[in-house]
Length: 210
Image (tube, rainbow, N blue to C red; front, side, top):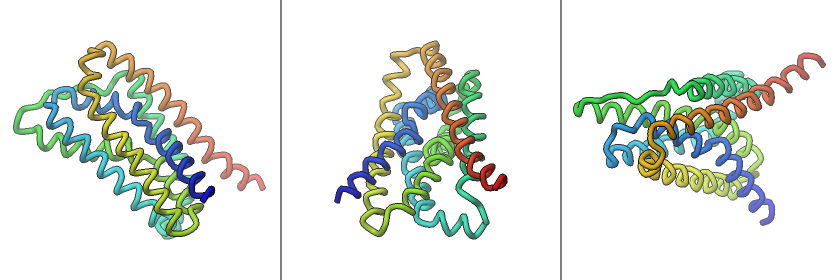
């Protein structure tokens, strides 16, 4: 029982840190600023749901896919670090700008951004996917797997509610505040990216040197 509680706490904290709903929020706020509250809510819902399904799919089949393609988790971490770093750089320079839309384009835009970049790679990013695969290996049976998926579901649900609250935050912060928040979060994402890159690179270098 204690092991399951430990797994649940570890899964929740690691997924919350890696998905980083507060880091996802500025990007969502910027990209959905011109949408109606209803379309923004629809985007948040679809992004959260797609992100959750992708992470669970990798958690259940990740090891098989990695073995099939001959990919190591450490290689995945390195690539994830590079993707995160580029994304953080864009955020730091406030390159993610609002898009002006015609009414006829709204539906397509909602579908597009809810899958990329919101679901992939912001929610179901390399970090969260790698974490899911590694933790599923340590879960030790069906009960552990259920605890892991429940912890992930809770994090994704919190992410959804945080994205929904972005409408009020957009109004409160204004454009300047939004840009400041995005730059700050960009810096944090870049730091996470560096950690990811070197946590993947270190075991590979040790293996080569030995």
